[in-house]
Image (cartoon, rainbow, N blue to C red; front, side, top):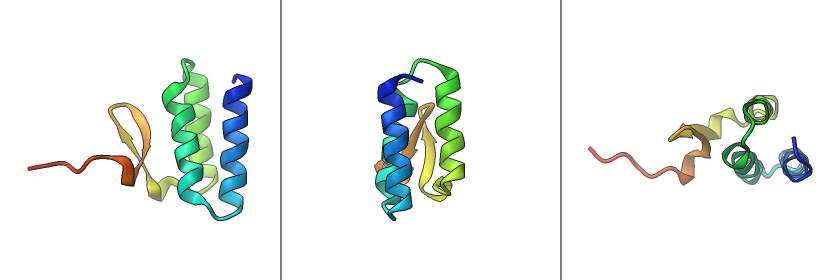
Length: 75
């Protein structure tokens, strides 16, 4: 994990601890979307579960996303 990615993970942990769950998930989705290493992506997903943010997360086009940021599916 790069220094920037680690900073975002630390920020997400702090945000979640202070009750800003939506912003924490968006920070983790940034890490998941921008990294090139599958190990870092797996670490971001593991942190989503550890911080109990899975109820607000979804996968969209292979990337972690906040449920409010995903466009509605039209039928």
